[in-house]
Length: 491
Ligand code: GLN
Image 1: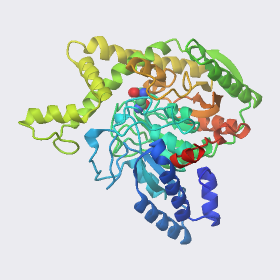
Image 2 (image 1 turned 180 degrees about the vertical axis):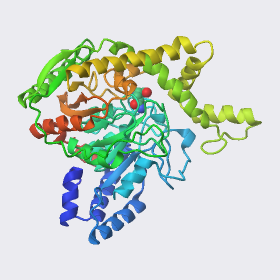
Image 3 (image 1 turned 135 degrees about the vertical axis):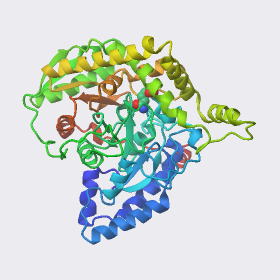
């Protein structure tokens, strides 16, 4: 049962085939069996999950039909969860029990979801491999010597390994789509403003966006229905007419115009990934779509612009962690300045410090025009590239990542790591929605296909992704997990 999609579980719960308590128990048992090896969860909320499940079963017996009633979810550990440890993968928050729930968490709860726990992530969502987590890297369920991707690596690993039915993540430069690709699941980064950021521990506020990681495009639509919507606690959330994202899943793709950016099929792309994506595009053509090559001329500038803007915003956002009000405080400070300095020096990891320094530098008086302002100009050019492309095509398709999941500890320098986000980062600069769906395998590791649409056209993305999943079964493939006990038996 635990391998089923949210849509399937909803039916099983509604028909009485299984109760939420039984289902929740099954996930908790699986977590107990495999989390040591996968390190997908930082916190598991066994008692409260079973209690929430019991209440969900009662509500169902009383006639409730909430959309996610009794379905177990995991939240990335940067969503504030009332009364539950919320670390953002950092030592500086290793003792932070949030006094309130993020809007996304609240909405999931109001829809009846059962919270299993909080998932591992790169520290403050800075990374593409989950290796910058204070809690150690999560592992890729397809091969535990590989990274699950990042920063939402714990959520992706948990969904792929059936340690939950669905999970939340956030995407600032690729952190939902890239781990979804590496772990063989479906993940969508909605348009900027679609989902409230309130209660999400901020990394780069003009780029951060929450979204679901799940087992199918249909599930992504169901989850987006719950997560999306304006929130008066987040002034950047946008008020749009309410939309049912499942409504257009079954529209025909006849006449759909697909653009393939030539920059996303160029040097640096793994040959196996390219072949898988071209095959996937051929499947869509067989469903009636037409394909043309498009040009995104400023693609190669996106990473550089991102690595000025994101650290600049991060340097401001992370100034609140000072050891005074909450989180880590150094021992025996001699005075206030010593406390600030040592709390931050000891509380933040290397990658976070690197970005605070880069960001502070880029924003400083003498360099603002040379770096920050220039990066913002590039951001505009990137946005215009996409606007021009969408005059000609309905969706843009390419690989989500240049290579399949790489080895743990295999990428040592930051810049090589930054290049991992080459196909995903531009969307955050432009505020556009993108989804990654499983589209094949290379050497036993999943391949992700990225589908991009214009602002607030998530329904179109989901429609294309769902039609693709109706004629392919990549999203249904499952990794074979081995835990310590089974490995011992084999040896
Ligand atoms: N890998 C990118 C970074 O390190 C993106 C991370 C994200 O989307 N949160 O900033």
